[in-house]
Image (cartoon, rainbow, N blue to C red; front, side, top):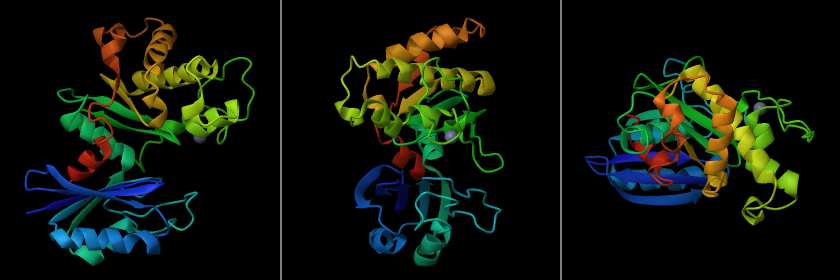
Length: 282
Ligand code: ZN
């Protein structure tokens, strides 16, 4: 028996096959073109293995409410070709198997919770910092879904004095101020080319720390995992931890938040959290 997983991202579609124990035994990556361009290759791939179920972690915003008539659809999106497209319907029609859809960051949080840096905890968060910023939250052993799904990248955070570059979205949201494209706008350089001693990293760490303090305050998570391309710059971790401690100001008197080395950590599954989580959504 085989299972399937799809991590549907803005630039690539990662498809994987799991064995009966959901161990990944094969994977492919397909560029994210239009649905017409990328769908047939994905369907062919999953058909080859005659999978019994498919878990999808998709870019959002997406309708992930199983009771909704548009379950599994991409909602309003900068990717106009995908707006309104139902991943659930496309794969259910083509494969005839169980299909479960959640967001990419919820899948990643779930992967980290089952097998990665959140394993053994009752609550935690996964936040990706890259082209976009978004996260999934585990509370009492379950992913938080709510009305749609949390948009943790779009919480509003106080701007640091002197930073007057316009936010890309909501005047002062964390994605608008601290995502990869904003780093490029601030420096005129690609993220990977920005030197480690650039002052922009201090501002970046400050904004991420502000967001993390808010997540701790709202969700009381026991640990926060940071992933995504920007966080490949590992020197950011100690900078974020320092600002986190400063901004939290000792208000939460719990051992978890006092040991920021174990509270704010890199992904345990090293980039595989999304696909492993998607494989375990059903
Ligand atoms: Zn925003």
